[in-house]
Amino acid sequence: MDASVEKKKTVDAGIHYPGVLSCNLCAEIFLARLIPIIPVSVRVTLKRLTGDLRILIKKPPSQRIWLGFHERPKVELEFSPQLGAQGVDLQVLLRFLEKLVLEVIDEVMVLPSMEDFWVPVM
Image (cartoon, rainbow, N blue to C red; front, side, top):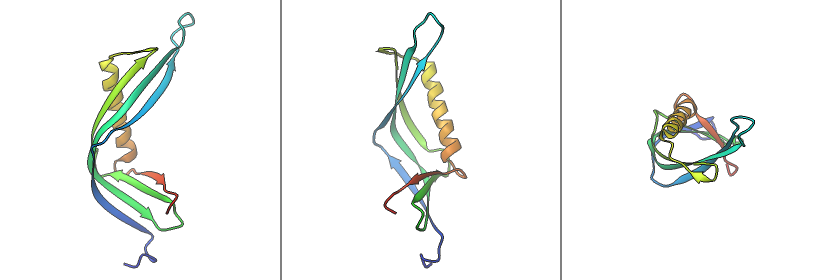
């Protein structure tokens, strides 16, 4: 097909990301008036991501691409919580956070849902 006539391009591809990508989530917990605010942070590290991905690219002037997985990707996450000034081992909380992250992936990035990203070079 002629690219000037098409309104979008769709590409299906397999993705395998074996690298390390980390981010920190921070919050403060306020329990009661007499107890000081407790800073809480969790480092979330993506250690592996594997799945079948759909990429949607609209023709210019659009500067966005859309990404969505055909089904939930296989994800390996590592959580490192820190409560106050020290690290803690809270397995129940960590399992809850992992479940929450996977549910967000399902809601936002599993077809028919897609997440869009701005790509300034397009």
